[in-house]
Image (tube, rainbow, N blue to C red):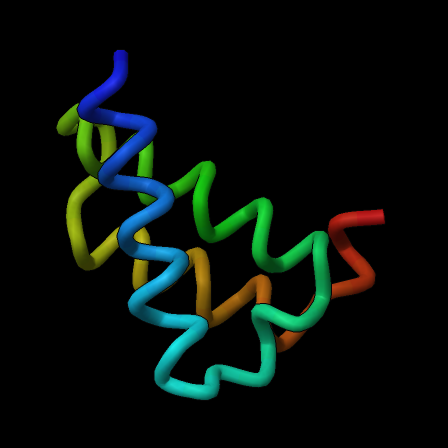
Amino acid sequence: MREITEAALASYVATASEGSGSLTDSRVAFAFTYLASHFALDLLTEQQVGELMDYIESHPDALS
């Protein structure tokens, strides 16, 4: 479990440090780390994470 948490947080830090504006929305940031943890567990593919994040970034209000 620790490795999954570290993977999710490392992905968040790396993406946030690139200046990704969408991660300033806490809902989108949570979704990103949630999806990153599922990717680390091999529950989602990189393509699935990308498609989901594209949708989430385009429709942040869907997370409310």
